[in-house]
Amino acid sequence: MSLSKNVGTFNQNTSMSKIGIPALKIEEFHEILQTPSRLALSGAVIDKIEKSHHRARKMAQDSKAIYGINTGFGPLCQTKIAVQDTAQLQRNLLLSHAVGVGNPVAKKLSKIMLLLKIHALAQGYSGISLAVLERLIYFFKNDLIPVVPEQGSVGASGDLAPLAHLFIPLIGEGEFWQGAETVSAVSVLEQHNLTPLTLQPKEGLALINGTQFILAHALVALDELSYLMDLADVTAAMTLEGFQGSATPYAAALHALRPFAGTQEVAQRMRTLLKDSKNLAAHADCDRIQDPYSIRCVPQVHGATRNAWMHLHELVHIELNAVTDNPVIVGDDQALSGGNFHGQPLALALDYLTLAAAELGNIADRRCYLLLEGLHGLPPMLSQRPGLNSGFMIAQYTTAALVTENKTLCYPASADSVPTGRGQEDHVSMGSISGRKCLQVIDNLKKIIAIELLHAAQAMEFRRPLRFSTFLEQNLGILRQVVPALEEDRLMSADIEKVLTLVNQRALNVTLS
Image 1: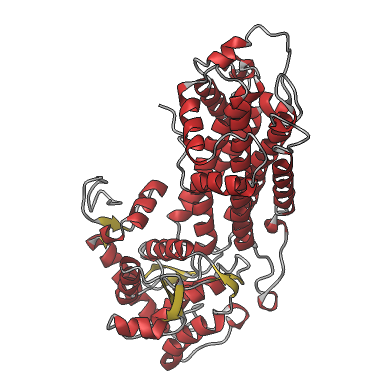
Image 2: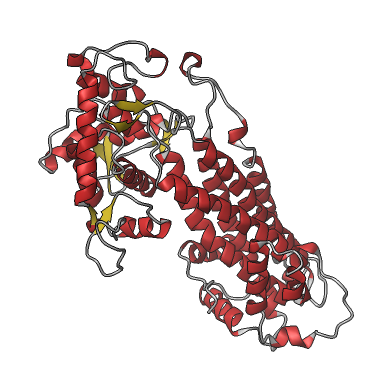
């Protein structure tokens, strides 16, 4: 996968992936993540990196103060550092900023952060040496993934604490993942016959300045929610079939009058999911006028979540290819100091996506409740013998609890800012918290959707012998392979876990041909 016409054109069949500039697509990034052996630097990118590194070394010897190269950091930016101390300055920077606390983030997130930083440094504006970048590529290719605590970043000046933990193994500190265990970095380096690196001017700052922690969470959120949005449409269609609702609210002519992209996509998907349903045709002439909003307004609600997803996707594509450290070296004697490390662009959008994901769960819970009311031929609690059996009554309590938990996580972290660095860093994004909360909400959403799938499948059983669309029949069959229809009360937590496993494995078909 090449990223410049100077080094070739993207080709699915190429054996190597040359990273650098221009823009890397999100899909291409995931391909490199899945096949690390394809990662390589193009000759043009190597030349740019070496030129930038030479400039940084030259600036370190300049009598003029240049932030982070021959000065202290943050509120200590006025303190000039002697030439002979610039290497110690960079080592001290990594050590002093590795102050993260809490549980480690998932290894997957650390690996994404590592690749993101490799791509950012490969832009050639950070003054990093080729030796450091090649060591990071070695880590990535050999699955040497550092351990990163989840708490400690305020999202400006970049994700300092988590990135410090990500890169202290370069100097023989910190830990790597080894399976499910963590081991000291120095022992892993010895196993691979690697010696700790001595960082040169600007290198420590280039490593820890940036938004890679926030961006990694955003990439995972986009990937997870992409499947869950499609699955939510499938689940809603199954609920409609069980409820014997109307497909009229999904008509193309209706949505042409309010043409939001997300709404139109969901309406189209719902029409396809319900196509040729015998169950739908069987009650086409019933006297019911309108369904409750949780069924009737699926395109509007699910579609709004898609609109939020599209917005974050656009921003992530920009951030993926951005240079977010500080200062950036743009000429032989010019290092521009600014605020590209500030996480606000992603923080706001992540908070938006958090709310959008929570709403998918909110409306799914309402549909679960609707199926339990005993309306339109369905028995109360979806039980064949209600009273003696509680049926699905308490499963909906769980969705109610999860929905409320998600609501408490919807407070926007980006609405807050706590000054740091003696007031030099007097406005921060808190985007790292936005990202972490977003993934928590998405994890809860998976559970809510799993429970709605159980409700919807049970309701559909009461419409037999009528048949549904081929697509919904297929998914109902997948569910029934792991969970039979409920005839008498049984341990339902086991059923929920089985369906949640299907959701996590993406075993249910959501792709419409």
